[in-house]
Image (tube, rainbow, N blue to C red; front, top):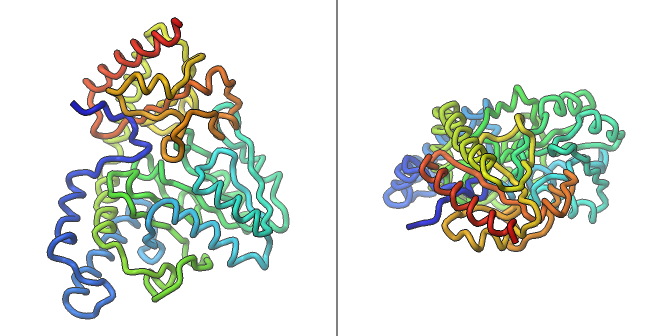
Length: 378
């Protein structure tokens, strides 16, 4: 039997409806969307329909959606695009101390190019204080980039409050929404966002496809040069079957958002409740209420999370942030939240999804209790 999959924040399986939508574009519909003949036109229609499906999910206009290779490229395009297009206005960028490396490492690169980066602190729940944003704004601030929801602990940031500060000061606002799109409501107009990053493989679409929302009137410096694909913003023949898959996944996400939210929260809370009723010594990381419905980040006292997971081959979960580290070390997120080493080294992220079952949760709770219990007895 396969291990119980509790790592949906790392990646999701491709939904069956998404697979069915993609099949024709792996078989018969092979045309180039830039071609003007029948084969190209059929595929171009599919690309534009997918663009509409994505726009509908986040309340955007069709011409505000640009397809990318994934969340990392979307973040790079948004942050570097603003930085280089508007460096005549200033060189100051504000971000947080809990961003994904696809944002924090972009900022490190820009620092090497002469940009001034401010990393905002977070409270014990991993949340930013909007007042801190306002305090560090200068006349040279051109961009604020704050993730919508944290990939490790699930904490949701006060995006709407931050966006009002950005707008008042005529500053572009970007949000990495890779973990939030499809799990919680994301409305770019209500949230006041200028740029928003989407990753397909976080919402049951394939890997290697993503999107960037760019509010009308927002000027970006191109990263990829070539022909005038994607409104002359991102050169390269479109990844049609991936685009179709992402579009279908967004359509499903919109249709089932409330149902999936309730179900994932039920599964996450079921696991948390069962572990709380055990004799294990652990702490919950992240905001107890303003958090993703599927994410349960727990720090088990005085254990090595990597060793514990090695002893639990029947459970697929993550020690720390799974997508960029194979070893257990105190993550930047946990450091920023000031989690003590005695707990942080034993941090495991369990993230459920719409395919998680109650039986899997019950079995997982039993395995976790047994294995972690042995570690804490020693």
